[in-house]
Length: 379
Image (cartoon, rainbow, N blue to C red; front, side):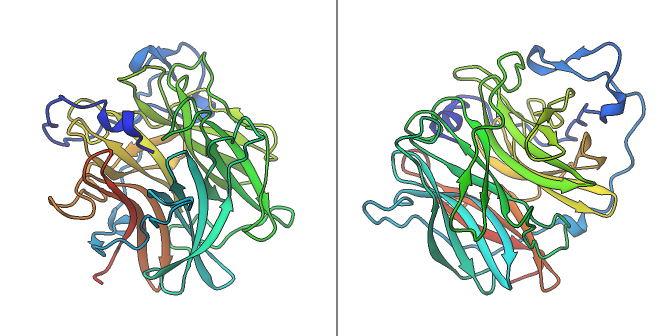
């Protein structure tokens, strides 16, 4: 997520010179993590450098969604006292029992809470209510709680149906300790539900580790998938700098959803160089499988102050190569996404790939933050 400080930390920087070829991630599979370690960006410890090249990238046409709808499909309610009065953010789209749903985050001036919307056609959406709310008696979620993902089919061309574990849906959530827009170091937890509307949350399962510089400043979105009997959480985190931090993506794994182990080669997706579209942030992962490929959609925040959706691919989740093209760009001045087109959520329906995203126009604090969609064929 991009809060007030994340939006303004680049003020005064020059516009990016161009995309160029985005640098390959230096992460490697766990079996390769041995021997001497090398320093990465910000002085963080990284895995040993690889001498072999990754497999060539596949044709990325199946991953593309170039046709924007061009209008907001879910906007702030503007209703006094509502949880989404001021902004809506962070879509997560899925299918369940023959209907499409989207969890989203609402901001009311105090903090985040999570709502649910439903649709019959992925274009027209109606609110279904508040499903995850803050709790004044809980110091972790006193001011906000944002549901980020629910365990679902992970195929790029799947319909995104939810998957239950022991009869319950499993979700990840993120919360910050102070009121406001992402104030203080965030933590990640799990939540369980029999019906999407009533959730039981755990204590945080991941907190920022002060001994890991890349994530010492706080954690953000957590995306949950299961593969080969192992659960993966892809999450982005920030360095511990007050004004000029970086955000990058790492992995934690668990065999049972209880005990979580960080991958020692984190971050697996690092921010790019000064002219890259992800020069500052590589954030908010959305993970899909396509044949042997792991696809990680994410957003990059560039030195020009704009956020755009990008893609990285690999035959291993620990070894990803950034695709050198923008997957979803900001729009022209005056459009619904002239500032940010970011925070991807992917679903496939009727032989069409859909990418839902947070569209932002205008400048903080008077920006209009909403949700829109693009797809693989014209509207």
